[in-house]
Image (tube, rainbow, N blue to C red; front, side):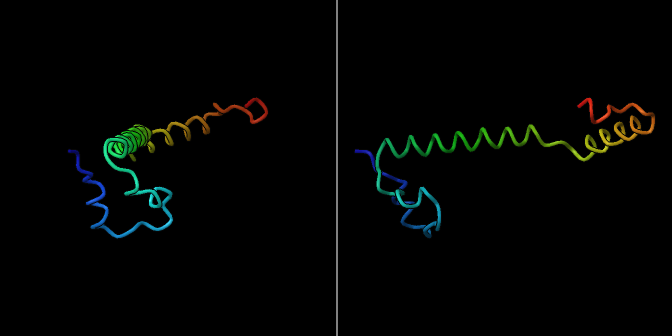
Length: 83
């Protein structure tokens, strides 16, 4: 017999206000609910990895700004009309 560990864990925590999933939390049990939670966690991990990939270090940002400033000083810019 499968036990719903999520419902047990949920009853020990304080309710989340204004969370769309809070209304249905604990109403579903078993394999469906566990699979749903696994999918949510998987999407969260994907989002986290994408955010980390997009983050530049301070050193990289400063390097890009220095290069852009040199291009401006040398007149190596594109007029707005051509953008």
